[in-house]
Image 1 (cartoon, rainbow over the protein chains, first blue to last red):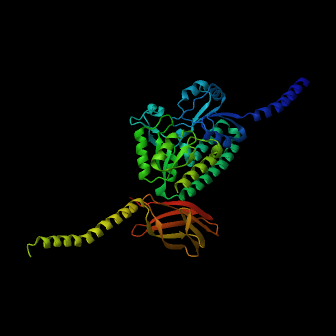
Image 2: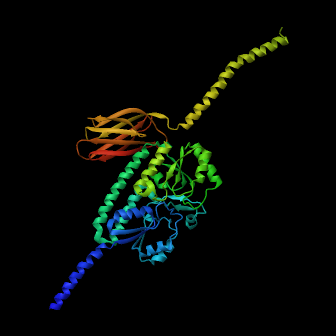
Image 3: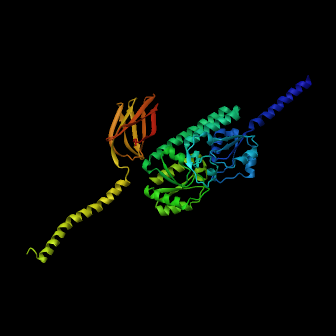
Length: 305
Length: 143
């Protein structure tokens, strides 16, 4: 009897020591998108550890996972991907994880805008469409899409960790309220700019979703990805368009070489309107999603007025 | 006299001189007309006379309409309908008007903003709120 009591007491004491360790364990997430990294951190809070493998300021079109990145991915329970064929290294991730982790291509669950790709771009080569139409992967440039992505991430975290459901729901609600306020601010800011002046010339074609939400027309210097250089003919046509449409400013991007853009401004007479965050979070203003949107919208509206 | 070459020459000179004035007027009008055509082509957003009508199911209500970052109409109304006529740029791409309205009583309220460009059909948008509404409304004429 004494032995049984001793065993029970030992088990209880043991359990008391084990429980806090289990509670401190967090859900490991590997993210291949800077915006999804922020969403996972905001919604997951203290219950998750997020490894942001595509880092702020890094060009996701050019990114290739390092062996260390793949090790972290292999260690994760959830892998967050932008989707819409942006991650052309998907096979490497699948090999590294062996299919053990839940893989969530968030963008694939969002409505898609199609676009004509340069035939030399990787995405165009992989495209099934005979006309070379591909999915525009830059869904995060729509605040409404980021709101949808937040709901998708929240639901996946709840599926993987039912015990912390209430916290995930509460965190998501707070973040969604901020995004809603941000979208309202953006709409009011854009409303300052007459609709006939909403002509956006940017380094590469990354702002279709923003254009759809806020009524802009896009003139892109490069295609959907940053892999290819624009042809002389395309640049000449663009300069012609800029002159005809009396576009006041054109915009650079934080991840691109601004040389071609500067040449176009010289020829067309348009000024450089500033630098935009096209491919996700970066340094400075764009280190948070809210900062990124406020920076992009203010830069565009102020330069085109 | 009739056949005098000198007289003929004088008559030709006089006729040419008489033509000079209208020719000059014509050419001057052309050179003035060119820039105005150009300006018309450039300014796709010429100002139009527009009637705005605001309807609220709760009274009294305060309101402000903003266009291009500038307030263009504001006030307070005890009547469910307030209206004004003003001139606004209305490009083919449409116009964004920011509508802010508020009322003291806390109850679900519909606020309707109707816009009628002179000689065109009325366009209207309705939004709902409990104590206030604040929304960007886009008006575009059908092509």
